[in-house]
Length: 389
Image 1 (cartoon, rainbow, N blue to C red):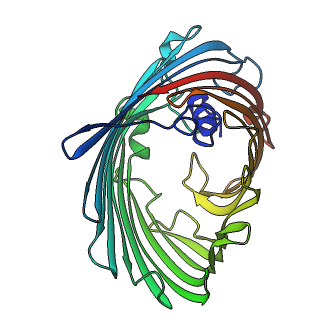
Image 2 (image 1 turned 30 degrees about the vertical axis):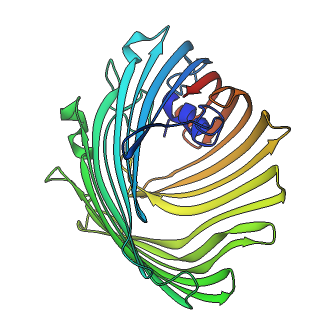
């Protein structure tokens, strides 16, 4: 499984190493009942291994421009949000890998009454899979795909109740737009439903029982990857207890294939996300998960263990730094292959004004595998300037 330039870059961004919605406080322009908040980020950087290749690494300067706009409306206890962004990436030494992606999302938060809350979400995404990515089609440009998704979360119960019930559901249509002869076996639809019951055992702590069911249906009629995944989890969730908050879930998962050609999978499963704030200006975020990833080749599935530790520290009102370490272990079931990937990210954010910030981020990735061709090292350096009103 090889990484992508965009994947590494925006993994850093999403954790606060890149772009700026995390470093600036955008103001909105009000037009009647609607608040409009435009933003713009511009990134300049260098990637020394665009295609995650062990032997013949291709390097390039990168420029990424990402304008976005968010519209927010509120009515009594309800809120509505519509967001759109366009991301344009340019590689100086590999123009065939230039891309333009689009992301449109709509959300509604409906407080029906004190006991009933409904959150709705939908998105339409035009994205790409960079060359060198996991199982990417071999071509002279990146694979491009469209994701259409719908999701809901319904919660029953008042905040101080002994028990609360949460129901969730989602649908994803993932379809490739080019290299269709090569990618048609990877088009799929994911339909998920789940429920969690929370039982308060302390003022800010609840025990939970969770069940999830997901149907994965591949578009190609001859595919043997159609399957059903089921998870059974027990755990705790706590809110701002002393200096920590978070949740920890442990249980069992199984993946049953429609085709007898594939071997059904089962494993322990866990999802841990904990925030520790020893100081108001210094925060540690720890996460750990075990889950199945969809097959990327001839394997049945990928049993994945992922761990992440992030330290965010504000040195003063303008300057903050981030350090993140990721470790991932991937065991390919059905074939003989195991991968381990370590990455470290170092970032510094400086807020010049409320509406203007600069970020410098460095990412180093080191992947090992018992298949030598899958091993690689990669260094990415990005400078991001972010602005809003």
